[in-house]
Image (tube, rainbow, N blue to C red; front, top):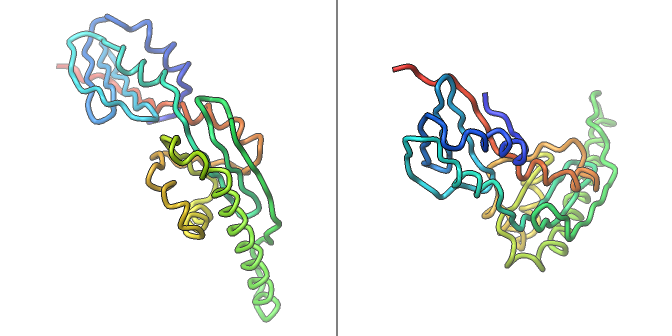
Length: 210
């Protein structure tokens, strides 16, 4: 089963294996390290361009990919709050967070439920519009430098924010494959995000016997 592991922990796991008996295959953005007894599959978060096969454990390409720093824009949105930021490597260099009250869903029927629903929709729309405006203001100055975009929070809310402003269309074009499921888009979540941004997808499985 795949799991996400911080890049420093992945490095510590892999480095002692350099030159050991086994094979290493680089293809499709993945490093596949086949050892006696187990195979380790590593997918770096920002891609892995190297493609080659080795009859020993050769780790330089994957370790180089894991060690690289990037400029990443982040947009985290849930109904109730948003967080927008830019990271240079693991350092947060620009950010803005905000919150707006959005009522929870109404469980009863009747006219009161309809009024409640309309009020909730108004509150949600106001939050989406505010988050979109802030995202444009914070991220537009970085547009030419940002390499990747991290989206997270609630998928529907993110879709609504991106659709609210045409100027945000470039975010989806540079979106990382991973969607970041943060519980609350707050400053502390934004500041913790680099660990997840630079975590690699790691899978271990038994090495087939011949």
